[in-house]
Image 1 (cartoon, one colour):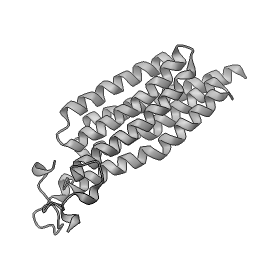
Image 2 (cartoon, one colour; image 1 turned 60 degrees about the horizontal axis):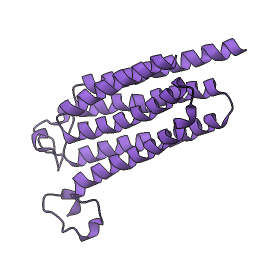
Image 3 (cartoon, rainbow over the protein chains, first blue to last red; image 1 turned 180 degrees about the vertical axis):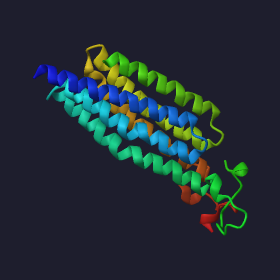
Length: 117
Length: 99
């Protein structure tokens, strides 16, 4: 039984750190702000959940697991919220994905990306 | 096991820091700061387990709280040019949604 828990822990933590690396690599490599937004939220969702789950399995049913649960719950709520806030602020400031900046678009507050903050 | 996770998170932090410095627009930087905060939360948790003293999770929770508040404060500042009560600020002409 112990060996199974150990393997489960290993699998969760290794895959969690894999997703953290993938998210950060995406944040660094993607061409445009909006695609980076997607990459950053990969770390926020998959990386956090897998790592916290792995640590929870490792520490068994103790107070530590409860703390991990609280952290996971809080990050589960604020992760998407803060990503949405950043995206909303960028949208209002006039930042647009490159394909949507066609000349004849009737978007009222469309600004060239150059004068976005 | 935890050392692998620690190394992975440190590498991820470096990548996000490069994005922070390179990010053309302000919102890339805010995104990078937010992502860096989440990485710090994970790093505190994993380092706690690495050294066999997983009591650091309270600090990780606190950091997650402050990271969220910080991100929202930065965004609010750059949108209304002020963090305090927005009602007294005269509506600036080029802010479309206020007209």
